[in-house]
Image (cartoon, rainbow, N blue to C red; front, side, top):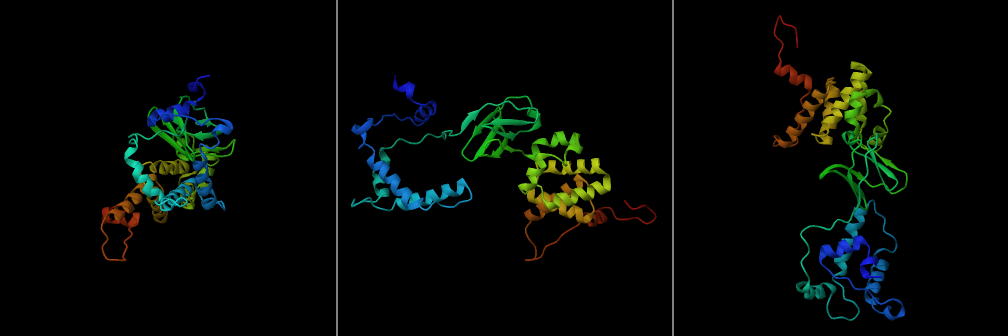
Amino acid sequence: MSRARVEADRWIAFRSHFGIESFYCRPGIEGAHEKGGVEGQIGYFRRNHFTPVPEVDSLAELNELVDQWDLHDGRRRIGSRPRTIDEYFEVERPLLMPLPEEPFETGRLFTPRVDRYSQIAVCTNRYSVPVRLIGKRVRAVLHASHLVVYDRNVEVARHERLIAKGGCRLDLDHYLEALIRKPGAFPGATALEQARSAGKFTPVHDAWWDAAVKAHGDTAGTRALIEVLLLARHLPHEHLVAGLAMALRAGALTADAVALEARKIAQAEDEPAGTPGAATVTFLHEWRARIFPRTPGRCPR
């Protein structure tokens, strides 16, 4: 059997990308001595940095630690050698080929079809995509810690990767166009539960929603909340939550009022501060009173 047949497709793509040639150690006892130095240094790194097993909150944090350990190890000497690892590398650096300008794609590629629930199946787990893609085939790239979904060449969804089997990760934003047409389905939506658990749907959202339902009724109040959630596509999350809080205090229970308050907060952050330590807050009803003053003999706006 030829070498091309036993090599994995991903390995062929990898060495083609970096322009390297592959050669292999001799099998069995005859080749046992050929990688001793490499395996020994891997053992050294594991014993000195992964024993005991480090406790981290994410893969990204672990990678940062590995980078720090790698830099530290570059300053040590192996055995009785006269130079450090970094010094030996500087001798070899001019002999190395330059890296390609484009990074090598390490993720696994899938082309699933979006089902009627606006979800795709990747490695036994399900992930949501925007409802407009129902019935279409999309391109999903699965990385070690996250999944990215593309419609043609445009990114349409990004999820934290599910590790266990049979899981489901839903983004509430993907369902808003459908829910605004059927607001009665919103309170029981699984995507809403996950948004609450992730802290994206806050108690401020709930308080504003309750007030809107009392003022406008279940259907209209819920639809107003969904309109507010759609604003998150154009406004930062923290500004939108602050705008909700301000609108709630002012009794302004429409999406337009929330957008106004959120943009006022964003504008205040962009403007240079006046007196150090002083902050000015303008409520919606005060703003209206200044812009639309009452005229004697006329009904107030």
